[in-house]
Amino acid sequence: MALVLGLLSAIGPFAIDMYLPALPDIGRSLGAEVGAVQLTLTAFFLSIGLGQLLYGPVSDRFGRKPPLYFGLGLFTLASIGCALATDVHTLVVLRFLQGLGAAAGMAIPRAIVRDLHTGADAARLMALLMLVFSVSPILAPLAGSAVIALTGWRGVFWAVAVAAVAGLLLVRGALSETRTPAERVGGSPGEVLRAYALLLRDRHYMGLVLIGALAMSGFFVYLAGSPFVLINHYGLSPTEYSLAFSLNALAFIGAAQFTGWLGRRFGLAALARVAATASGVVMALLLAYYLAGGDRLAVLMTLYFIASAFMGLVIPTVSVLALEEHGALAGTASALMGTLQMLCGAVAMGVVGLFANGEPLPMVIGMAVGALSGVALAWGTLGGQRPAPAVQRVRG
Image 1: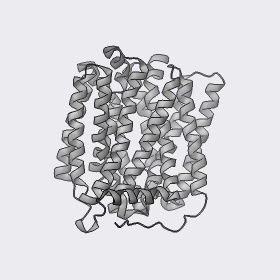
Image 2: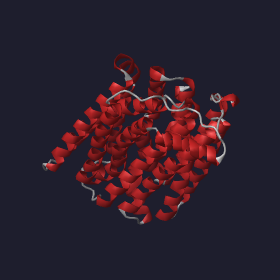
Image 3: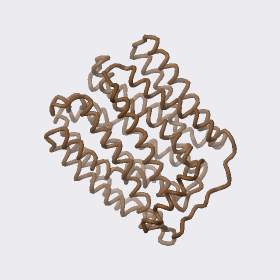
Image 4: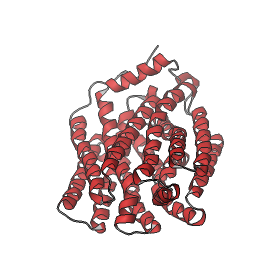
């Protein structure tokens, strides 16, 4: 189950990570500026976030598998369109549609985890899911570099289209429906809005979601800026960039596998609070280094490697805690969580992109602001006891 869910979750990120080494080439091929090329990333993140708001309630009402079929089909068609795009504006639009399709694979697997488990068991399954999911940032840039060398950047989109077709086959043959007809809720627009209103009023849920969103926003800033910083500023080749990018994913993956054990030993809330704080401290040190005039790639890679490891403890833990008390609305709760994380990341990328100049400092400032904001929110949300459980079921 973890393998199937992880692969479904990874299809969307694969469409990001695999073409990162090609961003400078796409700009040259389509005659586009850095900001316009980065907009293809922003459009994808916006749509993959907004799309989850639709897939979550639909999966609560009709089951988990039907919306997965639709989303993967849309992703496949949009990927083919991206491969055929002749200008950056068309590519931006098609990337938006591609993100709408990928949103199904982001929201629904987390809901399936909640269908099956809670507590430390859910944290363990979520970490296993993220183990498979996190293979994307390790293999995708390397695979992307190989595909780009053989076929050019357009070949990347043909490759992810094939991956989506494989995902459709997995859903059909290897994934069981975890949302029984008796458990299905919602359906009308009013019920959906009431469900989202319930979640938005739950301060504990929202605090947990935003801790994860702020942690992810720093990663998204790195995602958008690192190809230009590492390749153009520090002089790495696309393959060297892919290897450097993969190191951070290894740190994230390795740490995430300890969430179940550490959660049982110290409690999930304490684990999230301490890991978020440690990540913020490391990012503050990195920011201080660049503000003091430092400019060494080894320092950037070392400190961000450590920060990535702590993020590997934060993100699966707060995801489990956020869904813990909303089992009846797991799809909707997962969707809102994913949407806010993606929108926060897209906004962070857009703001930092306004100041992007190919130098490391704007990127590092954006990463550090996200991490330090997450520290403050972690202590505000997880510093005390959880209030009385919120109502889980919304009735029309």
